[in-house]
Image (tube, rainbow, N blue to C red; front, side, top):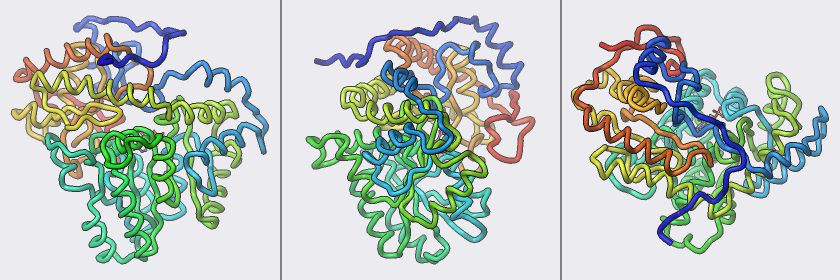
Amino acid sequence: MKTIIEPFRIKTVEPIRMTTRRERETCIKDVHYNLFSLRSAHVLIDLLTDSGTSAMSANQWAAMMRGDESYAGSDSFFRFFEAVTDIMPFRHVIPTHQGRAAEKILFTVIGGENKKIPNNTHFDTTRANIEYSGARAVDLVIEEGKHPQLIFPFKGNIDTGKLIRFIEESGPENIPCVMLTLTNNSGGGQPVSMENLRTTRKICDTYGLPLIYDACRFAENAWFIKIREEGYKDKPVNEICREMFSYADGCTMSAKKDALVNIGGFLCLNDDAWATQARNLLILTEGFPTYGGLAGRDLEAIAVGLQEILEEDYLHYRIRSTEYLGEKINAAGVPIVLPVGGHAVYIDAAAMLPHIPVSQFPGQSLAIELYLAGGIRGCEIGSVMFGSEAQMELVRLAIPRRVYTQSHIDYVIEIIIDVYQKRDRLRGMKITEQPEVLRHFTCHFDYV
Ligand SMILES: Cc1ncc(COP(=O)(O)O)c(C=O)c1O
């Protein structure tokens, strides 16, 4: 069959409301052109993030009723632990309220002045938490990963040659771990190949370094390995995942992505000493180690979500439906990061709006116009988010899991193509007020 259907039917619905362009002009001006500051009621199709925006299944809701809310030793923790270690067989699993809490704890334990942590592409919260500890976050993605229009199956791979040089130059004693982000959200949602995971493992072994994954989208990464990498076509996704995790010493995880829940995360570690320190910090900031900032029912929902995410009908639909949006707008001329990533389509705003210099944030200008034209909320991933570290000027349209149907996406396609045809009218923007860190969340903008 050519038509890939949503592998679910809808039981509960949430109304969304149309607004006029004039209403949207007022709403966005009122929040100083920062899309994060909009009320969600003023958004029609919300593609700001795929994080925590999934629709949970009937089985997840049912499992929540089983939540054991005991302060210590809750049954829900053990069900959660088993579901995690079934895929990610690490010795220690430490629940946190979301991914960045796992990052904060990990880098408080292993970061610090004069330390450096390489990654294919650090996510913004990972970078911020590393740098907050005093360490430096360094991106070493392969050259292909920096060219939006270049087609390559695993553009999320780390440059292993550069990694070796980096370790030698920095001294392994200054590198507490090597990280790999699966898939690399800030680089276009691009996957890392099994071969790259294996080679990175070997490099880590040579220098005695731990390898830690940012595993937020591990299942989407595994699906790309299945469909793109030689030798994996006939392997079940859960086996691919187990092989992926067999090369790592731990991971940070935002369960708000590939565990299909609205809140939650965890930190996995093999190292007993690190885990002890992490648990002590957890008690200080998150909660007791068998709930870590979550309710027992949240742990139950994660446990079921981790099973559902590996269903191949789901992953097939998920990756294909994201690709569908990318394919249609690209066919109309809209420049996007190719190939289309797992969880999002990234429009190359620098290529689409060559008349707006990087210093005037082409990505922000495009994101605002998509909102004005059709009530679509995307997210700038470029110089607003990363300042001078930005490698590309992108607008990310992240697709919430199991939330929108094909007609919603067809509407998004129509709006994007319309904006593209009128792209010459878009104007540059400037920042008028900003905080010290993670400025994109709260800064104010205006037109130049
Ligand atoms: C790759 C990556 N790492 C870490 C995080 C942080 O996770 P959380 O939002 O749960 O704190 C995100 C969230 O978007 C992400 O995409």
